[in-house]
Image 1 (tube, rainbow, N blue to C red):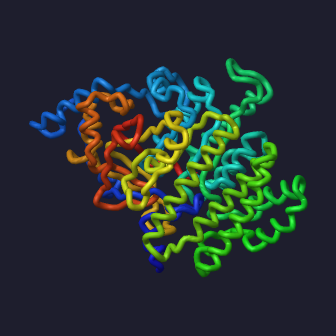
Image 2 (cartoon, helix red, strand yellow):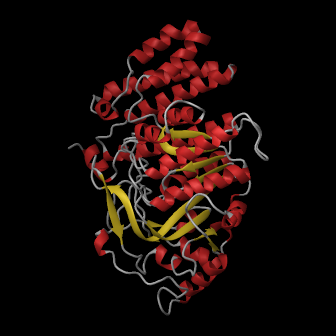
Image 3 (cartoon, rainbow, N blue to C red):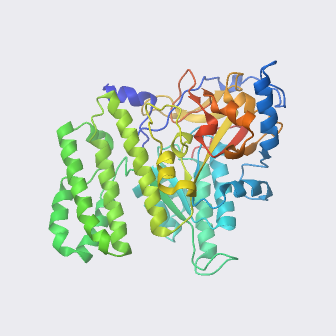
Length: 467
């Protein structure tokens, strides 16, 4: 096994993103042996610690109870959260694990609410750009059904779950009801959209290249031969794993060709219309993918470079979509991608959230999740099957222990306006439950109040439901 494969043994290369997934480790307890946990209450987590007691009292004053994480029904409990989001145009909504039901359903619940109350129109996901285009085509009236589309485009990923099939189904149903006619304050024809903001892998296939070539053939035929020559060396990219096994020099030559193709499209994008801009973006994603694959991943230090490139690409793609469409967007990814800090700053030196804050300023808002105990799905080894992991209640040294002492079972906080006692407590890095597609011990640490703008805390989570 190569050094690269050893590295992604603990950070599995997600099959829908062809990039190293956010990963963390948690102590494992068999589901059948999950210890009982006392009901949360406003009790200092460490007797005699005045600072912790002060922090808990401050959290009690700041917390807004959350009625449910399930979509549908009344949304009055989201009123304060809507105010926290304010005029933000891109909202990053994280997940502390890649396989918990409540995180996934809360994304649908909040997205539905923002569509109706704040005019949001795009749901963006940490997944392949090209797969996202396919899902969006279905939402805009394309053939198929939600479950089959989810199976085909989310297959093998953390999001190959009933919860995401349900989200896609709701989005299609929403569009079918509102297409070509007004609905309340929404203008006629303003349907919701789906975007994958990641590099275009584990495969690009021929479809991505065909989109670019088709545009050039129709609009700039003089450049077609040059573009076909550049892409002939690259297409199809059906298996990123196989491409990563080719010699480094060959991968670097492929990256140069992909970038030259993008540069060729870029000249047209500056003067062309909407079609030119989209063709350039497709070419950009091809170039991003080959740039990622050109890094020397036999060197462990390059894994950090790869993650830096990937988070920048996700941020750039999201910002491009926002500029081009004018859509207000809910961006779904792991906590470590939507926030401003990660639990592994060596692996993730600059997060997508930090890039987006730099590009959009206060028009970007990051919402993180924490949970005190429960179950989730994770892949314990490189290429391994997704299985259920259960973790016991947070221990007194953890951030979630104090958070779970608040009297509300589930609630949310505006970290930007917390009283000083709570903010200073959460600014100290402490262990957190944080799992991507694998897990490890000891637990990683995080300074929560510096990582997000808003925090949603859940008492317990359960494993998402595989398709």
